[in-house]
Length: 54
Length: 583
Image 1 (cartoon, each protein chain N blue to C red):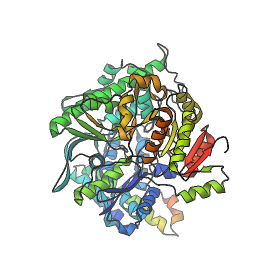
Image 2: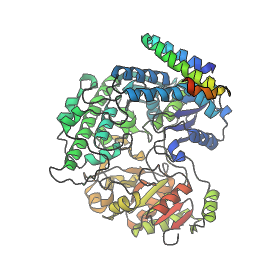
Image 3: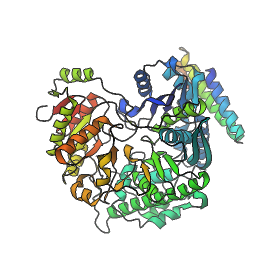
């Protein structure tokens, strides 16, 4: 999970480096949402509610 | 240093394992998964590479992915956002796919291989192509040109490669960026002509021979070639990100006429004024435009590098017809194309780049043979044939087997051969091939209609003993053509070949030949010698051992499956001969 967060940070750095900072919020939210989904699915009792949340 | 290269997630996923200058194993995933152009992470190919070299994942010093996914994701985001609201559906799908697995490729690879995450490295798409071409070539220094659809952002690149006593380096000199791409243009027109993108480009090349380039000016008006080989695609005619299935607009149809509906009959040679004639003419115009653009690109590469040798890679380098023209009319004395010039080859290039450039491994004369895939264990083959009660004859003497096969082929039979390690790249080079006597005028129709079940206008390639090649096919005077060993260029057939070998000469009088050496493929070489002893001709028709829309066979089961479902007369699997009359 840590490496996924690192990947998101790396991607955000790349966008800022290329002067595309305006993409950072969108990418950050989308990527962190996907990380959150994985986290939720990993939790046995929470997984059934993921569908209803999203 | 042991380095595993991996390419995946676009098309033609592959893995290649390199130790120093030696390529231990390389294979495309489709051979194992049986899914044509399989793009998934190549788990089976990775496993094969490790098994073939007797290594464990922990023995690997590095695992290299062939491109930089974050830069690619950025390009995809930006290009889709610029096109919104058009292409919104494709944008949503792309986001889903990327957030699903592609963005986390480091984790995915580490998990698949079973290695620590810090051993996973990333090359660049065109650098991987360039490395695969240069380090597989015999050149110590050369210009390297890579041309494909698109990598991270680059679509066309010029590099200079050099190996000297202090090591090897590959230097980027110039590149062209998305959306301006001759590869995407070729694919868009492939779709326009009713063929599947990333699969039908070969068909367009075959179709072009039936047409005249009367749409060349029209095409040139949609895609301008400027000075320094800059290409500018007019996006009013093409839209790469709007739709996953159609990358041309209605404006292109207004210019060239209605697009061909996939699957509609294409009768060739076409009747004057027919739609088929127009499609053939558009294919010919596209081919001519591509060749002219590549020639201008090579002039630019020559200017920038001052080199006399050229290594070419990227999907466009598989255009065998263009390659011949580049050798004949281009500014370079020597041309080399590696057998897996498309994206699969990126796996090999990424591994070679780490091995030679980062680790400084010395080089060893280039790629001599494309037989880098898995071989079948003869004991397994024997067990398979016995367990399935398949009648066969076993030959302990390889010479006797090839003499028998040569006699059968000379009598007009069409057979297949599956022996040794399978080929690296999209061509069957004798290890998994359907073979026939090239002399019979009806052989081509028979193989096309009853065995391969494919379009009748598509030509078949000849495999020829290297020492006999100039008798049948015209060499390029004063130039060194290093593309024919891997079937990567065409050559005009001599008058004798046009008369004697009608099954392998295309309608335009050329053939996509494979020159066979003992070093490149000992089995095919021995069979060609046996066939020459039998007939006086060291040439065979050679096409891939598969049926329409299937990957080329890998295992004995794949090969027997093709035999069982087609009208092949015989099948050789390792040292066993299976004949139709007894099977």
